Image (cartoon, rainbow, N blue to C red):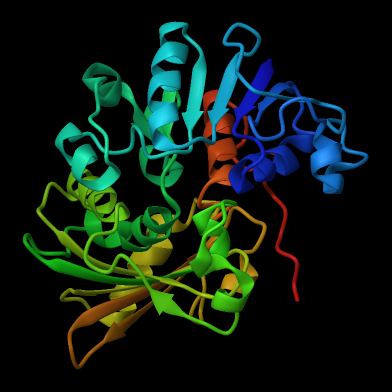
Length: 341
């Protein structure tokens, strides 16, 4: 099968190229980048010198007929139309943008700045969080790959949601830290080295676009109206993400821990740890490391969830979704352990 990566010169596209190097049964035959059109992969990114794809040339536009599977690593507005055209041609599409993650089309103008014209396709798109929606992903033609913050947070919350322990109209408090690569490769003053080095700051404190994504999935899982009080932060590392989640629940500490172990006992990519999660222990992998504790004084569960924002938060999760669609083991080409130290 032939694979195209649209927007292959961005961080998520490059991560896909790295991870798909040893993937059997597929061949990457299209990579696009308007900025680097006409140049080979190794010319622009010497790290791929000796890759089997080193001489693959960036194109300015996709040819929809040349590939079977399309990874869209593009801005939301571009993915919106490409996904529709590709699905009309019965192609497999894994979209790493937010164009099809939220079913309520009324939220898109407010949070993403565009009107969603494809309601039918929006309803058919499957949210690509395998640990929750595996059965739906198997037959999906359009997978809406989750955001990085929602991936870490939803996996941290999932056992509480399916057990019904969070009351209706509750508020979940989420404080999350992300490496700078989450902002992409474009130039922006806040992410320049002199600004970001030795610096930590919160952003989009009251209106982050991942908030409705999390709330939408939480309601889909629990059938409850649960709000998310989400505060994202930038920290001075290249990649990695840590989400700390607190919520009122009535349960003993031992039962809480047992709930998490039982929920995730058969999930290869979720590791329940006995100490608070650490970003460095998931870098370059598809693992999500979760630690859970209980604050007896305030009657709150406290969960920490660590992922690599470019891997489980984006590209390796996209490949996990591809593995499900192609009926391969989910850890196929994704079973590397982190570089440590």
